[in-house]
Image (cartoon, rainbow, N blue to C red; front, side, top):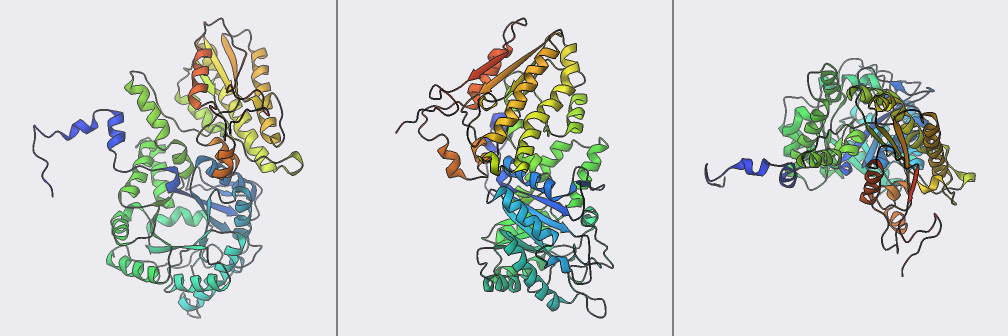
Length: 542
């Protein structure tokens, strides 16, 4: 231990004096690229089914899973881990190796939706597909047969790889599972499919909500194959075996109760280390927050940074999208406002969720003078003839319904203020079509018409309605999202344009419009970079 002097010469609090200082000296940060979203997809349902013990988490339909994957990619999340829930379960988990099984179909749907923008992972285990709920085949005495199970895992691995998985997660804790699966994949020509080894998977009381999510009818327990919570050194033995058999990544599960194991694993290996914040950990925070016993957002942030501090490179969490949307960014902006003497509160919100928006309005307590609807998001450049309805739906939900939800919820408070302002940030795409932009153009035109209609409807009220329509704006996410994470295509959008607009330019424009005298309503303000004369006329140098 190094000596750093003593008080009063040494004052550690100097490095905690301001938000900027604390950000600069923080040892660990959670980035969206650290996060993986676990998702459940269930066969035979027409609408997403809420999971009662996991508020906010659902069993997806294929359509809703498609949207969830696109949303995760849009938020910058690194990956998605899929769990399938078939309609029919049997003793050998037939659905697990059926190319038409729900998990395999879901893998194809997600890859079709996001391509390589997300790392698409699949759970390789039998518990979701067997009627007895165990992770392996049972022998005549009802015990899990390790070696017979390995043969099933090998079959499952090939089917999942062929369905489109980038990464397989053998989670059954069978001896030899990594080596057996690796050899099967290589023999089938899937050498690039990676393996995430569940190196330390403990027999835990925290799996309860997960078993509801996958509708597991477990008989007995899993103590003969999952690890004893009392053991730490045993995890190192499992680690050594997994690495020797070809694991590309290793994982500790559950997360928070086993941070000591996570730290030991991270200190030992040169491969990426993952931690799974499992269903029970999620449910505890949500339940306590619902009771008002803890601050939900702070608890989420604290648990996630704990994983980073303990050595996790990758974190599987049901809060992945929420955390990615606000990780460091929104709160950092709020802190900057506070440091400058203003008041600010960061409030993560899914604007497509009407109930969540209503809760946000209630949280504001009936006070609101300015609402800036800054919803956005474009997917693809497909022509009308081959446009993906899921993309169109997602763009409409975010741009149009998001604006509708917020405006409707906050309009009473804006009117009550006696001097309210609604800003709707649309796009020049909403005013003039361009080839390949049909879905985005349609959504932005609808948002433009919403703003114009609102202006007519509330002209007698003390509320201004301002539409800001930016042209080419270079931001961190917009084009990257549009092209499913293809950085090269995203970069080409701005190539040769000397000075595209920035987010700061648009913010400055909004600030100017909002601060005009109360009787001045800027109905429509189109703002483009000097190098852009229209949606399709852009001057590029070189």
